[in-house]
Length: 332
Image (cartoon, rainbow, N blue to C red):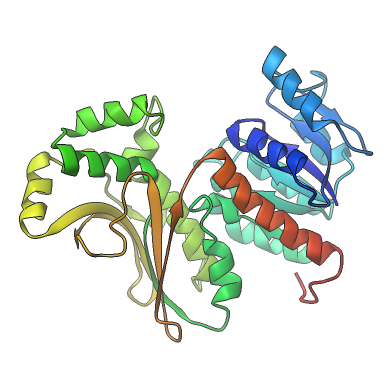
């Protein structure tokens, strides 16, 4: 199966490395970064592209763009792993729509387009008879979308609760364990590489809110947007609040919750018993799904990282590969 990859950040490079090292039946025929692109219908040398990116800062021909790959490349699946823009979804949204319109399957880790235009993208994929897979947009290596769509098929999802941002979780853990101030814990998170230079999306709760929108659209009966989520971050939390929680054998975690019957879409710090399954350490993510038949199921794992995100993308690619080869009989 032929694959085109847009984006050569840590996720894109990690994905290419995995494809290069494993016999997955995938042939990379095109790659684009923000400055260039390279295409070959018979397959490109991943090692040469990675070396070009490392040595000169771009992967291919500077006269070619990501959209050239989308519109002219020879591929069965487009992998869209460019940076997220939560406000517009661009340029990922245009890339995905154009690929779907060409009748190509799409796999993405790009949260912006899925959160912003989920219904539009879903309809377009259905009309063209192709698959849109987005496991890597939520929870890193945790197979939450697959669990909701396949593993719990037939169940009614009553609620989802989760720790969906590793940066916030790390900061809260360090504040509680070492008595660090919010500012000290944030600085440490930056030094460890867990927080961006501008951590606003994380600490203000925007990133987990985007992921909550994606989860809600996967099982909710009506489409929702980021504006529908009530959001409170962790940037105003104090050591006093964490000490008071500890006195009650509790702690504080930033929890994203979706409860359709009550119309709740919310991200906010929550007081939880230390024994609660969502009280995970460090940068881990944890997601509890409450269903009518299966009861409560909690998934815990690494919520970020190039290899972890590549794991989710590979899972989607192999799902599509099997579908592409006729092993999945269901209508996309």
